[in-house]
Length: 143
Image 1 (tube, one colour):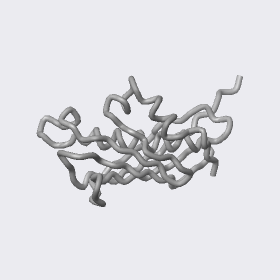
Image 2 (cartoon, one colour):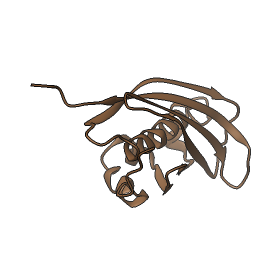
Image 3 (cartoon, rainbow, N blue to C red):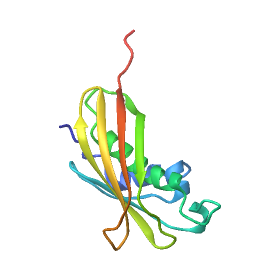
Image 4 (cartoon, one colour):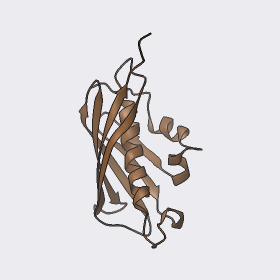
C-alpha cells in the first residue's frame, strides 16, 4: 500500500474553499494510512425542500472523504483519479448537529481503488448512510 503523508487534513482543507467541499462545509479531520475522517455541520441550506437533510449532502461528504483518501494513496507516477462508480444506502437522517464520515480503503490497486465509508450522527454511533465507491487511477498518456 502506498501512502503519501504530504496529503494531510490541513492540505485537503486548504484546497476546499471555492469548490463543492468548501461550499457544503466539509472539514477533513484526519488522514492516516488506514482511515480518513471528516464532518459537516448540519444546517438548513443542506436540507431538501421536504425539511430533511438532502441525500446529496451525505453522498458529497462520503465521496469527498473517499476521494481525498484515494489521492493520499495514489501510486507513484499516476496523474490523478476519477470516481467511476458509487452506491449509497441511506438508513436515517438528522436535522441538527453534525454528521461524521469514516472512510476505509478496501482495495488499493494500480488501476482502481475501492473505498467504503460510514456516515454517522456526531456524538453517537447511529449510522445514517453506508457508502462504497470505485475510483479509477489515471496515468499520463504515452506520446
